Amino acid sequence: MTHDGFALWFTGLSGAGKSTIAVGIATRLKAAGAKVEVLDGDEVRTHLSRGLGFSREDRDTNVRRLGFVGELLARNGVIAIVAAISPYRDTRDEVKQRVGNFVEVFVECPIEVLVERDPKGLYKRAIAGELANFTGISDPYEPPLRPDVVIHSERESVEESCSRVWSELERRNLIRL
Amino acid sequence: MTHDGFALWFTGLSGAGKSTIAVGIATRLKAAGAKVEVLDGDEVRTHLSRGLGFSREDRDTNVRRLGFVGELLARNGVIAIVAAISPYRDTRDEVKQRVGNFVEVFVECPIEVLVERDPKGLYKRAIAGELANFTGISDPYEPPLRPDVVIHSERESVEESCSRVWSELERRNLIRL
Figure (tube, rainbow over the protein chains, first blue to last red):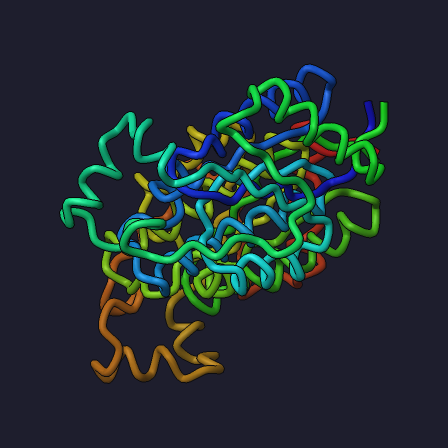
């Protein structure tokens, strides 16, 4: 396969499935011979943003750093897959402008489903008031107005989601078989 | 030209000429068609490390972040050129281990020459006690024990320095004409 360098950016609430789908599509792309890096928001926090918290300013700084690294990779022909809550529309749009080749995937899942799943018990703690600045409960999430792909993770399989993202990448001629 | 992905790391005191030589070699490599990114310590501080200071811990964090980004680029076939004081030997060696394909260039210049040049007046201020944690004056610099290239910037031209770095890259078969 041949491909351009671009950023594939997954935004959505905690637990919606961003990382799972990101890893799924990365695995497919790698199997097809693509150059791929996955930048997971949580993971990257330990490398690039240790010490940052969850205030708007700190979240924006983290998102901008992911964007900066994504841009470096994308302009050198690498597919940079980012999975990060990235709750603020303006900041995502700023990164999108900067990177240029940017595909925004909104991983949507109703909050009541997330509260029920809640494998790490984070929503429970946030609802109990024990976690400040928890996106969707005690902190805002601004959904994209015109995302390139919307994933409904509560009613589609990871396979289906990955296929839909893949189709969008083909449609835009970012990947070529 | 063909080339591997690797990190080309310039270490040395402030004002020794790291950025100048880094840009010089980057220009030559780009002209030959290579994929190159220059990560300048000062510049990257604004993108990746805003808020960090000049304590040992903060300097190390900055160097590790440069190493992290350098590694991402290098393993995707890009030449990542880093120019950063990176004063601590252990931290440089840690990054070297992690990146693997790593060429260390020590840009050496006697401190008395730097104090005399001092275009930004930083050494003067550090000597006057106005700048804490200034490498070489009020903060340590640990020179590499076995650098791959040593540049003597007080007695060789930028052209000569670039040629010597280029030769080392060819010798190690990292770049191939």
